[in-house]
Length: 359
Image (tube, rainbow, N blue to C red; front, side, top):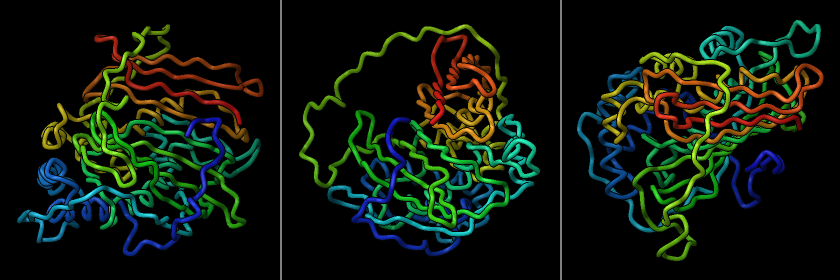
């Protein structure tokens, strides 16, 4: 989904259902850990998932892991992969004022009024992603979901922020997955979430691209792969650093701080040992932390609908010092677009490129 695409909607052949059990991230990561002990899509995925269990036990998720996870299982799923044709619907979600304040503090966002002179606060767009994310995770941790969730890498995001949601306002989240596809480094898919009001209108919609690294397998409905374009070496234009406007100093605990407000305790973000257990070189910052912090720097005014998209390049290894460049096209009532680039100043490698535009 690009910023110019229409707001996504549930595919016509998908069943809508309410997820069973609590839609809370610690419990969902525990479910992912349970799955790691019993099943996975292929040997490589099974191995990676099992390695994540020690990291989960040491994280806040550990308290809800079942005792059976002390002994890994040996399950395996054979055959071509296919995404479940189902959308999870959860009603009555809202951003609590205290939680929203903590979230904004972690990502350095300044809360703003719902409208000029209003006493109500608009929920920061990055916080809306965090509010909706557990519902997406409830789809990703279904028993019939074919890929390992633990260690999955966030590649991109595109959001339609159609209208502001007030802190405390109740919305309905609808989440599903689609667009399963082969990638030179594994298998990719899109997780999509919409937040709607009581009248059914969409206030916010987000599409996240995820990569299951190392999972190379057949996809239902696809012809066998040979020398596809996705396998061919790709040429990228060399990164040319823009004029810096700021710098972030990110400590080793950045991933844990964001996890504490977002609930996203994916082990690749928590510590070097837990990240290495999943094949990473060390702990990396959450993609949505980087995106939210970049979005907080832009000049989007109140009451203006907008879209934002972010492409993630090299992960931000923690601890880190990164350089940032913010380019706003206008300010206040004259704002129309922004771009924020984040990169490694020592190696000259890009981390993230966020673009925002008025709808």
